Image (cartoon, rainbow, N blue to C red; front, side):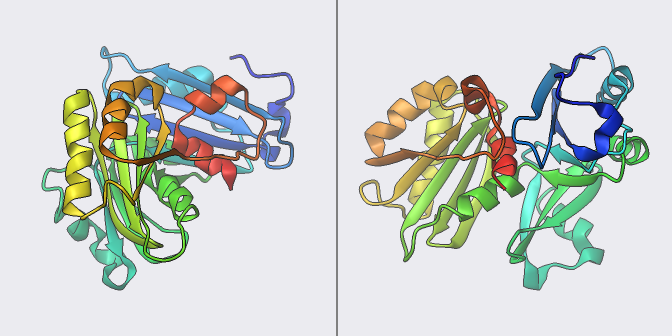
Length: 271
């Protein structure tokens, strides 16, 4: 397994390890909280000869170092299966009941994490076998959903007053759409964006339902924008204020990494 010369796993407790799981892929990155020059990202697709859980196990065992004692270990699940529950309505003992109110099919173990401001909880599902395996084979991992760092990132970009902003992040052949009025969260959804016309229609429908103005409210784009050029070209004709999300990671990245790393990873590196 190739790692840069400035990463010495004999001192793994000096680094953070983050694993990112998509429906058909596995990636990880290692970085030093104390040294911005230390950063390594690697990804691999998952084949279809093994089950999803067995694919994850194979990658972990093949690479062989994930059980090291890292300073911090996190696992992020990327999926459209999540729901947000305002804090006054959240009950840890009823999180499965709350989650299955929106998702009726069994999707595995239900996990949750609080927003940075503590105003709501993100509930999401993960395969129970994968969750149990990672708990056994990683050093004290914490589990997260990809929407959480996006919500935290976009919250910091909010303007004063009642200006409305729609954030559209393109990633993993999906779009995560998050809308605010001022600092008030209006909605958060993730959906597949395989057809440009369907994607454009969905985003336009959100604007209509939330009564966004095509002339005064903002559409802020991030992620794989170049890959969604057909979508963004149409949106720019429909919406006057189209902007791009500025990101300032605290590690040194190449220009290619700045353009290709998923926004939820970049958002985590900005903290």
